[in-house]
Length: 223
Image (cartoon, rainbow, N blue to C red; front, side):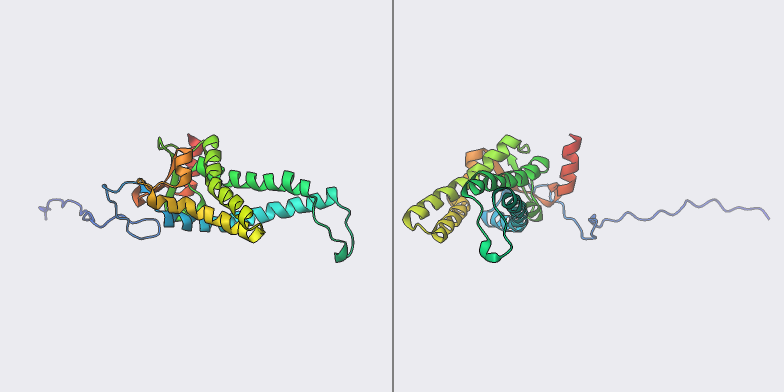
């Protein structure tokens, strides 16, 4: 008996029109018209609060190490609590304070240089770049940090002159920090004080253009 049947073409699976999903399984909606925009002040403050927990931990670690070193180098240690002494003022002003400032510069500088975002900024899809759209240099990072501290320092000095107590000075400095972002509400472009003084900007990135923190580190190293 001869075979008269022709070979049938192999069946192919129909193409799915479902949206692509991310590694977590959630669909990613891609909007070609979506573009980076200037970050809102409230979002930026929330990101700072996120980073603040990590920064406090770093400052606590640096302060503890320097306190131990300062105690061993500058003071006679006793065996009772009544013999406890405070570190010399010169050590606090010339060693510990600069170390805290350098810790802040290193924290923000490393993250801004590598990917434009800190851990808190990544959570809210924020990215800091210069006015040309490039990642900040070390000099630009340092300039932006100094600009961010300008108003808290000014408010702190005014509070110290008015009240004289440490509590009033710290409260005034905190109000100066808040003023940096309240200023966004009155600026035509929505820029903060440090944005204007450092010629940089913090953007809210769309999901399709958002680059993960560790990928940003990797890509920056390749370049």
